[in-house]
Length: 296
Image (cartoon, rainbow, N blue to C red; front, top):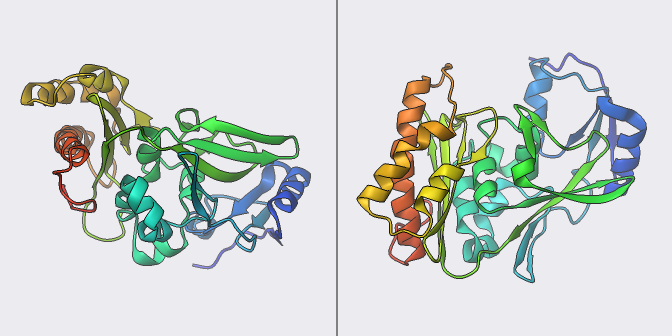
């Protein structure tokens, strides 16, 4: 199906130029990076931008860097680049594990992690992973720069705190102190390109501290504070895992749709939480399954 909605198009040479154009255009303008969400939405007549501002030609936006124990992802870093990055492998392999679950090879080659959180669909795979990594989102506008914690980024399905005149300039992630192990588990109907039925990200830190986040089982990806509090400072015994599973219903609000029933999603979140906790702790302790191992 062809794109039926007409719109103006501007290819920006810099982020500052993009901001100037967005500021003049107002709320009817959309930013184009990978386009793997925007183009299908245009095709399906789901969105109606007056202007599309393309930032793909801006140089230097695909950098992955580490400085002063902070990892930074440029706004055009793709999921394939996360998978192939030695810096990601060495410092935050959880991100590569998450990236490997995203859609297909073709989509991963174009889709950016920044675009994924800007689209803000409830099933976005990067949301839970960035939540447990306590990332910050950097933005630029005519007024200057600002940074927003990922915990305050999502405001609803396909909605974020980004203002229409702002461009996301990157994601920053403080590297965890000491030994840590992470895991991302994604429930989907089949191998290949499918949206998440449910997603669970876990980060196990030194001192038996845990961060847990869910995706696709609520209006936005979200942390699970009651589960984290339950596990705080205790060894990961069968009893501790059972107690954590019992709290899942307090942290999620799944729906029934074409991909799964709410009951199935809720039950599988318990299963994935248990498996994920065991994998994250064993990875932290140096004995776990290799990152990328399918656990569900």
